[in-house]
Image (cartoon, rainbow, N blue to C red; front, side):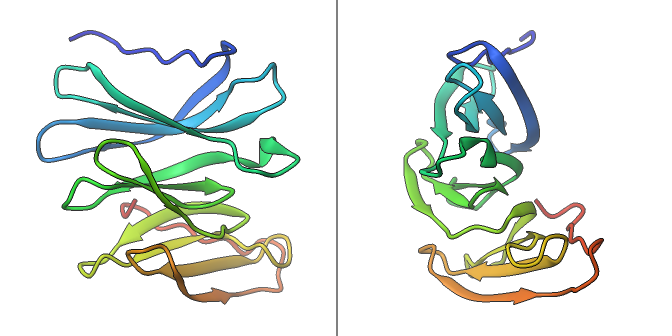
Length: 165
């Protein structure tokens, strides 16, 4: 099968940050890409089939005037083949074919994403309130935020869910 290399449109600073594999052996990689001469960084999520052939590529660079605020840290799949990514900026749900389904209101720097058996999505990381506080948000399967919890006020507070996203 060999190695697969992603080289973004501007051939500058592409980085994989997380990987997931589904029951059929499809591989999903998410990270960051810089595709406008170092001006417009953003999410890049790629699906490869079990033979390593790219099936789709989805990019997101937000609507913020400072697009360097967008990069992914974590990816998770549901049983229906939907793909969820999160990082700095916002969580996003993609359909099995890579079509954006919803974009949630984000956490400053999300570290992990987790799905429960009911299809709810949980995101945790550095909070968007006081710098250094951590925040956890719950979204329903349609991307509607159900609640958010913050902690602090100590600068070094962080949240990370090892092994769950």
